[in-house]
Amino acid sequence: MVDVLEVRPEDVADYIGVDLRDANRFMVIDLVDTAVDLINAYVGARIPAVPSSVLTLATKQLCSELYARRNAPSGIAQWTPDGQPVRLARDPMTSVKPLLQPYRSLGRVG
Image: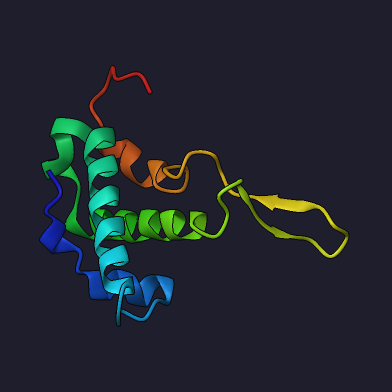
């Protein structure tokens, strides 16, 4: 399983551009915990086969996706100049799955 200590909240805060003072520290810790749980569920028992650098990047990327959702609860992140909505992916793992896919067991569905 991914060790939460492998990805420090300070590293995630730098990656997503958040100051760790006040309540932000607890929010970032929660983001890391959630990202680790999602990655563990996706990769499963093969987590030891995933290189540490890939796990770190996947965790930071997933934290960034989850952080972006806090300002877009309806899925709309922003608006284009002509008024069209820019939507977030429904699955926060969309950007992380290609990184982790080579390390998953064969024969898994989903």
